[in-house]
Length: 228
Image (cartoon, rainbow, N blue to C red; front, side, top):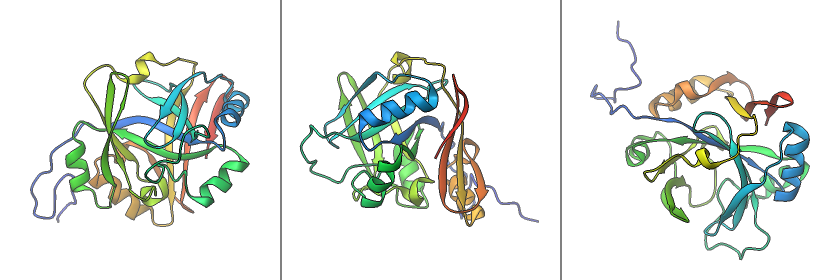
């Protein structure tokens, strides 16, 4: 009896084992100010650290979310010019923008890898192009679809590779919030799990059967909270 091994390709050649782990989660807001207020009410924390993404005309607030992980609240930057490309995380999509007027939403999870080129080459779906970003003395490479969509509606993560140095979360505030789990639901969970296995990230999220959905479970000063 043959046994499927997700770490071999169709020719039976072992794939390179990569060091993949959750890097951060992205929660979108209609405006950054509204998102900060909502997170204070929901999580019991005040998000004060953050910056701007000039290439995407977005801005954010961040905090630690566990061991070398962080929480990102992101929104379109009203003071920035229109970007030369479509914004990431579907922040130019009319359906996403309408949903964000209701409340902040889980948009995407991001996986830290030590071999981004191999991840993109081996992916069963198009993860987008690899774009290099810089801020201060830090730089990072991230998968970004040109049209701003999220692979499998955000069920598959973006992948990031940081330049050498301490993880950025080490300089962020620890407000007693930690990521407990990334939760994925799909009408065909077997198909989704197969994709996760091919990307060598099946252990990083829980998968259940249901309508397409992404949520994050957080342990916070207000107890366990689910953001969807």
